[in-house]
Length: 402
Image (tube, one colour):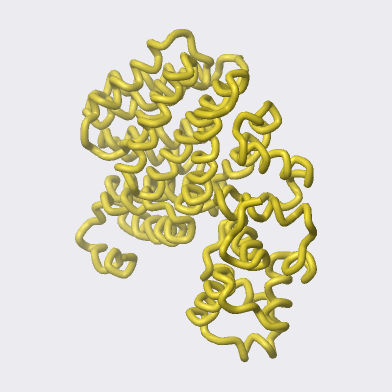
């Protein structure tokens, strides 16, 4: 067994925290929340708690009885499980600690964890069950209620693990890992986009397209090309958006939802270029594709009617037709109040109100969008708010917002 330079309980603390996507600061807040009112007042500052957690995870200090109890409450485990464990669990903790791949409590059996750990140690042992293990992790973290930056941090080690398998695993499963790598890279790309990192978004998109092509999967290649077309929602190179979307559709007959996705982003490119007729034509075609029956592709993306409406409204904003955009957005306001997607939709609505010279509504909607964007880590929404031109009479209110 590979040795590590920290006690196993310290490794377990770090593994459990990272699996929950908590920063050390977040864990410090949860320790304070887990304390009763009397003991909470005696806790040190959050900065001190964060530093203590760092020392615990490094194995330089061991939590005393009071903090051990708070940790158990925060993680929802008992003290034996957190600080002692058993012989079979030690190996699981070790490989999660060394790889950074998140431990999903209760999702896998001890046998499944042990089997995956052996495959990571010797990739030639990988099989269909190993593929299923990683796909389950990706499915568990494909959630819009999580912060994009947190998802990036958890998905990158998963991608690194998959990369080893599609390079070193036996031929029967190597291609399956390559396909999984492409899907993972595309998801990381979108999270970089939502987190306000266009360079990272394009870099990971390139990786996704390369893996899809290497796997010779035409549908997956079309999907990654279509998604890349959606990585630019500000004026830049609209012709490139159109070209990517067209290239996606030229890969062959696509399922209705992937076809709609490609036409969505082509419409976006035409809107940014100011081409009213082509934009409306592609939006109508995408709506028709969404209405067609057909099996959903096995990829993680939102091409629902709600997403379609938000994109239609955004295209109208880019075309200077704010009132038409508001007709769509007001009819179907964001339904998910705590996601980065909802923050972006609110920012688009604030933009439309400003362009329609509805000052008070623009300021109030921008305020809501700003609060939600900060809460959810939606830097894309913040970029959209920066484009909002609130009339001069409302500049004082805008200064309050920022």
